[in-house]
Amino acid sequence: MSINQSSNPSAPAAPLALYVHWPFCVSKCPYCDFNSHVRDRIDTEAWRTALLADMAHEAALTGGRPLSSIFFGGGTPSLMPPALVAELIAAADRHWGLADDVEITLEANPNSVEAARFADLAAAGVNRVSLGLQALDNEALHFLGRAHDVDEGLAALDTAQRVFNRVSFDLIYARPDQSEADWQAELERALGFGTGHLSLYQLTIEPGTRFATLVAQGKLTPADPDQGATLYELTQAMTGAAGIPAYEISNHARAGQESRHNLTYWRYGDYIGIGPGAHGRRTGAATLRHKKPENWMGAVERNGHGTQSEEPLAGEDRAREALLMGLRLAEGVDLDRIAALSGIGIAQLVDERTIDQLIDIGLLHRKGAKLQVAAAGMLLLDAILPEIVRV
Image 1 (tube, rainbow, N blue to C red):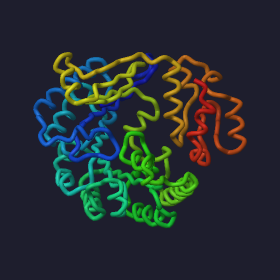
Image 2: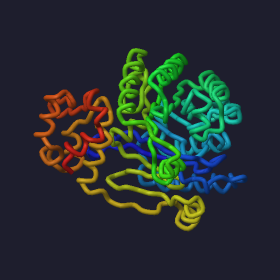
Image 3: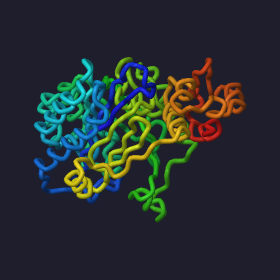
């Protein structure tokens, strides 16, 4: 779970965002190291007790502020019993209170088993679902290690759009051998579903994954960076023309359909994470839960919470995180706000000379304390950030 909080003690209490991490997967995942978290049987009652205790611990430290969002993520949270989801939502309401327009999101795999539970999850209080479609091509889904096929995924999407008020799904592009025409046709089809939010990610090779092993063995050749840039520019043009522009480098939404929960992260609000491996940021400290489910459960039984570490964040750390997260957003960052929350002057936060140079060539925009990466600069974001962030 996570929480969003103002850094100014004299300001009105800011709303919070809550993240619940459910670590269990139904099958081995090619993207993460949670393969050991595949379980045939789960003691739901023990997990209910532990999650409620972990939540209560954080609530005691952050009460008095309403929740603006709740996000159920992790392994396969859509296979959580709907009654447990409902109980966690009710407990969060008791502890903090829910905003009138609270966003409650649950991640789901797009298969028939999970889609059959959507109505019960909606009745439990979930009002937004994020589907991991990942591709609209069966060969690509096989390559990505997904268990569903296109027909099953689209059937789940259809169910989700009938059941939930808000739906998002993700696609991965810049796959090996994917042509511009291939991606154009796939994205055009995706845009035709009328979904309010899309997460469109380029395939990246993360250390320790099956893909990294295949690359090391010479069995997989990643897409050329120039090809990735071409597909990125095509993506921006097509989504913009369809009225679902990027509000973050990889996330696109119709007006009002942006993920409020993720905006808490990107705008550097405080957030609380509960459940195995969950991270948090609250009242100037970074929190981390035990990652292994058994270790987290043992910590909750011993201490009443699953915290592994809680470390104060220096001003430099807070400023760096706020800049690196916020500059991913189309809206950019308010340098005055970051200076205030970190206690570091703007001249020490960013390299003014480099900023002026990047403005001159159209990669950045600045108006007063408002700094934004221009659309042309987003392609070069990984190169730009180290040049302008000084902390």
